[in-house]
Amino acid sequence: MRALLALAIVLAPGIAAAQPAWAKLSAPEVLAKVDATYASAKGVSASFTQTVVNTTFGTTTVSTGTVYVARPDKMRWDYTTKKQSLDKSFIFDGTTLWVVEPANRQVLKHTVVSGTMPAAISFLTGGGGLTKEFTAKAPSAPNQHVPGAVVIELSPKQPTAQYTRLLLVIDPTAWTVARSIVTDANGASNTFEFAGVNLKAKHNASIFQFNPQRVPTYKVVTVAPPAASPTTSKKLPAPAPAKSPAPAPKN
Image (cartoon, rainbow, N blue to C red):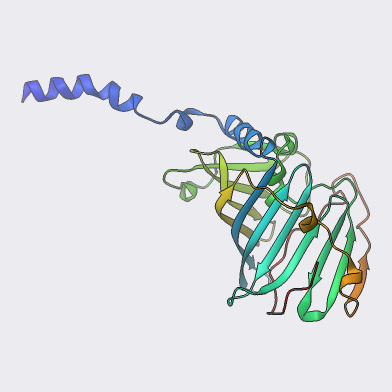
């Protein structure tokens, strides 16, 4: 028995040392690694599931699709129906955001000043944006631990009415984001879960371009950007849940 106790005492430091290196990193260090990972990726693609919880109306909406990213600021979100047909697309060419809604035969045109990304997806473009805009810390709620993952809580350095907190669930084997959760002051949340993340994706430049002349029967609505203020900027609207099935427009 004494021999077993002695062996346990000897092995105890070794067991502690077996803790993965990433577990010892501070939240700011983790955030820097995530930023560096996406900054070094020229192209990114992933499938996603978006869950929007509206506490005001008591509704939960779940949508799925595929996202494509080309640094520094091009992005495309294709939402699909349960039958895997295209439902809605968000196409951002770095200056203009086109929201194509086949079900409504409508296209929304947003002019985006400076090409900034909404909090829920800003990490996808890398380039140090997260470390500049957010303060990172360990999550404040104890139930936010995810086995085998790193969870950090981000707070905006400049107050904003759009959200109060951003949680990132990170895969430490690749330093990619598996889940992002944005929560506003009312408790409403917008969650993206990512799977099959490809950091070496090669995209044809045409997928980030949209010409409304190719869908002449669609109504084009130009959306004026919101007025800028000290606490808000003219940001790219976050992708929203798709509505109903429709055939894909020809880009």
